[in-house]
Length: 223
Ligand code: C5P
Image (cartoon, rainbow, N blue to C red; front, side, top):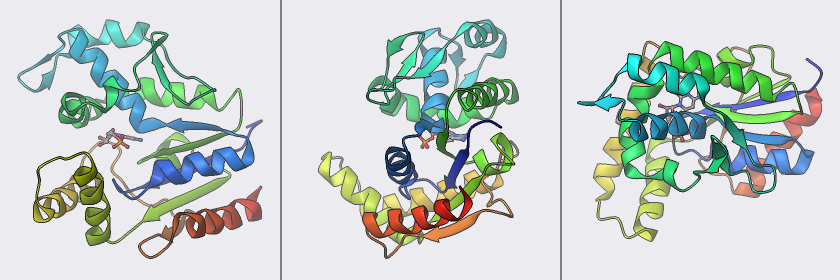
């Protein structure tokens, strides 16, 4: 490949996007949020009434997703779906409710992976997700696998939700984190798994700047 690719994979709520964005900024690479792409596909499915009874109607959605464009605006990293800024819409609870179903379909993953690889042909990329080091870029120049103890991730998530005045107990958030981990690791399509050649960073007791420092040390050994 002409440009380097940095994969940042890991569990949910462990700060992948923060780290990936910071690495991209330091290196002058393009940051790609692959989760946002699955969210955008989900938004499009909802808008076209292709989700019925919690299931994606593939006959309905296939022609829609095949014509769709997903780009990241370089100025602010916002996701553009068919040239429209949908950064806010893709973070809605409705999209969150349906994204795992949409992301479980092989034909959708194939289209997303194709787009992800095409971005890397135009510039160096830092991409975060679940299957970037294992599937999207198995020969990525740098692979980071980010982890943190489940209790710590739940505490961070709980803090975030408190700030948004969401009424939920810590125990519920903790259960939720554990359930999602289990789902992410055990699903049949693109399960979350550390690539053999990925370097693990456990950020349970690291500050953001310490985490970035460790990541850049790994990056500078490889590129
Ligand atoms: O990272 P984020 O939570 O925004 O991702 C949303 C969802 O998209 C995940 O829960 C997962 O179902 C899916 N996803 C995926 N493969 C990726 C990134 C995200 O299946 N590489």
